[in-house]
Image (cartoon, rainbow, N blue to C red; front, side, top):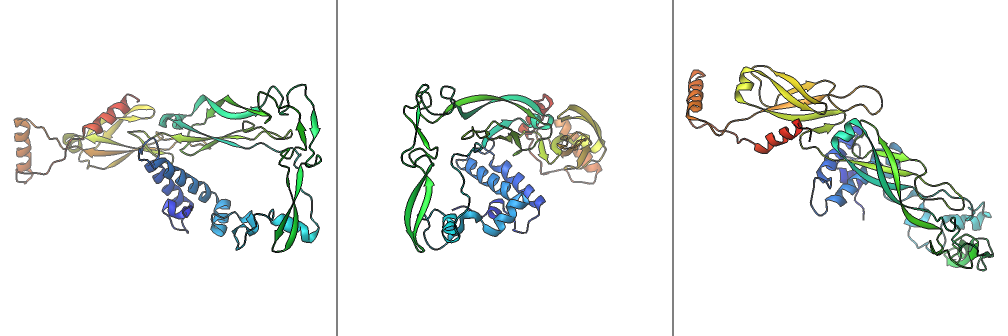
Length: 376
């Protein structure tokens, strides 16, 4: 049984669109398969994505708030008696009111849409990228051109349904005996059968292929964004148009930068002397290194803004900003001279030299920054 979508995202039913978006970003980062290696991380990620896909769209959310996980078009499907043999509400309606136009099983039908997940780097999402991907899909058989029949052999009218593509099935219901029309199981609604099946597709009219698709990923896309490629879905039936391909982008997390909307956040280390006396340091950005002036007396966890160094706006001009949080690092390995100078400084400041709590230098923190400088 599916969990409530609001429960999945950890938000109230009255949550705003912005609250839902923030909850999704947080959980998507937490359970992303590229980051979280727990056995159930991928399933939780899919659950979070499914909940967000519904609650982020007003129409889908309104429908979910009203009907929950139940499809409102199921008619009596969620009721108290079994309708599996009745063929659905439409057949009952037809029985009492004379019926109406039925969908012709031989009419052209659009092919199914396809979805493909594509992982991209953090910087590719920022600046955009053109790339080619291979998509596994079904295509019309080149041998029989989708008919399913062996070339050179004829086709016959289906004897089961007399070419209508439908069978009449009688069923006993609480309303009495109902004759229901269903798709013919012999010809699968085509109304025709062939004498010999095509050897390439074994009569299905379709074969599995891998199609190379060229994608133009725009600058500024975020995790979960979808690219629609028209006509690259499954082939249609009875001459109908093919479906579409939806490429879902999965943006890999960066070890130094974090993204929030169109803004980028990072953290850089400062020595005690730099924080106290002030300095000009180099900070990595997605565009390369930039100079940042640190005023004297800067406290740890102070934020500085680099305007225009964030993510380009997906729709419109301009870019977000980069926010730099500085963290003062307490040294743990001091020479005797350095200790002497710090004691002297403490005495001048009116402090008592002695046992002071000190942080541990985070070597991995510096390594991440070094790689960011190198553009890795």
